[in-house]
Each structure stands twice: as C-alpha cells, then as structure tokens.
Image 1 (spheres, rainbow, N blue to C red):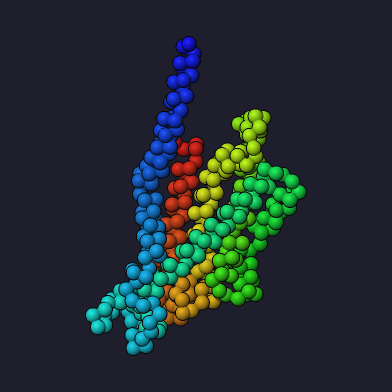
Image 2: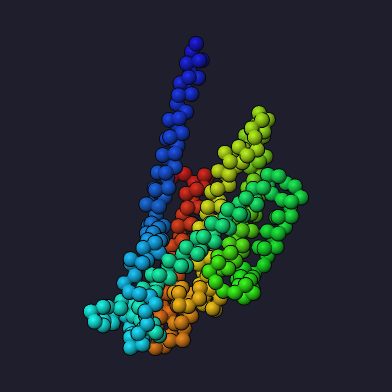
Length: 306
C-alpha cells in the first residue's frame, strides 16, 4: 500500500515538475540576456531595427522616393521649410533617413524569409537522410556537400545574372544557397540521437516513426539549428547588401542598404554621409544578430548551467 501511494504521489508531481522545468528554462533565457551587458545591448538594437522595419511607413519622416535637385547632397541637420533632414540628402535630393528606414523594411524581411525557407527545407532533408539512411538520403547529403563547397556569393551572382535581378529571384537564390548547412548539421545530430537508449526503447514498444521524430528527435535537433539560423540571417543581410551594391539585388528606385552604399561610394569625398549611415546600419544590425546568436548558443547549451 505504501508503494502504491508513492507511485501516485510521483504521478501527481510529474506535471508540476514539468511546469517548474519550463519556468526555469524561460528564467534561464531571461537571466542569460539580462546579466550580460553586450547581449542585452545587441538584443535592444535588434529589437529597434525590427520595430523600424515593421513601422517603416509611419516612422519614415518623408517620402523616400521624392526627388528635389535643389536639395541634393545636403549635409545632416540641414533644414528647409521647417523640415530638418537629420541624415542629409542624397544625390537626387531624397531624404536619407527615410530611405534608410524603408531600406530596413526590405533588407531584413528578405534575409528572414530566405533563412526561414533554408532552415525548413534543410532540416527536413537532414532529418530524413539521418533517420532513413537510404540511398536517397546519401544522395541528398552529397548534394549538400557540393553546395557547401561552392563559393556562396559567386553562385548567387551567377544565378541572378541569368534569371534577372528581382525580389523573387533574390529570395529564392538566398534560400537555395543556405539549406545545405542546416541539412548537414541536422543529419549529424539525427545520426547521433537515434542510436540512444530512449529512441531504441521507443522503437521496441512500437511507437510510430513520425511520433518519434516529432517528440524525441526534432526537439534535440532544434537548439543547434536555431543558433545557426541567427548567424545565417546576419550572413544573408551581408550577401543581399553585396548583391545590391553591384546592381544585382534590389533595383532602384526602391531603397536598399547595399544600393545606398553603392550610390555613396561616388561621393565619399564630398558627401561622406551617403555611405556612412547605410554602412553603420548594416554593421550594427549584423553585429547585434551575431551577439544575440552567440549568447543564445551559450543559453541553449545544456552543459552550461546558470
């Protein structure tokens, strides 16, 4: 009778234990960012960039496409008719701050969308190849190895040069070029996890394969892939800026941080602000994402306890 009572008490305590663990994990994430000043600053910068991208139509102080040759190449804090150009104007008299704000609405969602397509497709390929271990999975992994061996930016330039520079082509190109890394990492994790005792026990008692994948394998694969995803977003922002810089990315008159850099290189001696502010926007955004991703890697590492 005493054994039965102990079992009942253990059964009742399990949901509470799960809630405590979930609460502890959330507290660990909050504690990990709050107690580290660089990661907290990076998180604030990233949140600010995302908020600006979402609220760009309301945050932009002027029309980013409106031209005025009378107001061209004016320095920051120049005022006309009561309106202050905080970051000056470009070679066509357009408000640089407004173009920078609207450029965030293009560059950041493009990188996020391409990285989401990459992580979903790459994870599916890697998990299938690692779990099934058939000839198809082996072929997919060899394709992933070939993709990783190719120069990332050179392949993107070749694809866009053939298909033509437009938003859809740029999105698909960036997504295709990023799936191999996720597939390789997911494949390695699945090959390691599926041979552990609890997975073998689940097979022994007849648990269906889809349930094993969803409940036992994917949660263990998610942590390293999430960290890679944060760094991949930063990488895609740089790639998109590089493609726009050489004229193969976002086409004018739509503003993009890379194309704004390209416009400013011709006026570095006379109008330093044209290239400085877009360059700072790219640098701060990428740096913030990398700092957050690095801190997230430490938080999600089960070997590190707070």
